[in-house]
Length: 163
Length: 193
Image 1: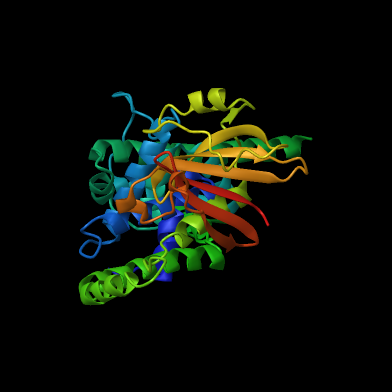
Image 2 (image 1 turned 45 degrees about the vertical axis):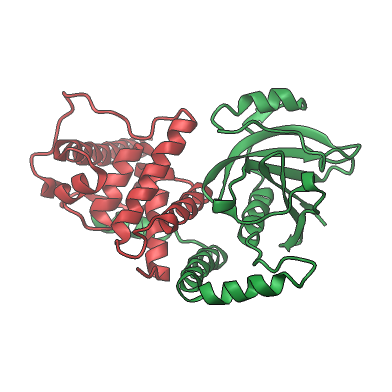
């Protein structure tokens, strides 16, 4: 399989969704490609396989550095009834930047796969080897955090008017 | 102005791009591996011929596999990422690296006077977990030393200074990079020329 420049940039953005750091994202991508090239299947599998290699390497690195890669869920975490209920969520470009800082790794990855790769919840679950309920929970939390941003922005606006 | 979360997220990630240099680095790595695979299938007879010719030469004619490693360690040297262990004592620094499947060894190539150990951090060389040790010389210039367990099957041929061979020298981005095998470890040193 040939990797074009656009493919590499998309993979880099996936790495960035995991690391939130440009240097770490490039390192992760580079290490992932090196591992991918060493596998016997490197010519016969698609980019999804390479993303899984990158994801596994990210988890290994977090484990080595004693960091939590993907936060576990409590059973009581609410889930979204339907994945498409997040489709109507509106946000400004400035708020997206703030949102990314407030999301954990799993939520950022889920948001990337949903928005940029346009995967369904089922496809994200398969890609990340996670239960579909976990993905729906993450989408719910993302939607809630967007709403919290809007509330915070409205609060600031009201304070400004009152002043 | 607000837009859909999906669109805003796409635009956010679209701004995250690798530089042309980074992209070229990856494309070069991909291309060199593809070329290498072609040689595997088509070069058996050619390699045999080279082997025969090498018998009549003083020095071996094996291809040099070290450029990718030299570029990788040079890049790490330039970045100077934060140290994970800070110590001027080699044994204390070495004790930090519990995740390695080898033991750090002092190198006789890094013993010049005025060189002070600052500490170390984990890194990787060709995806193998490695250690980076950082030194500073009497002029305040950094020198980084990399160590990783040597496996010729992974890294290829490198000179062994224990057998009296000289390190292999590369110049990358204005830096002087030396690669060699010592005490069963592949080592690399990087400093300004």
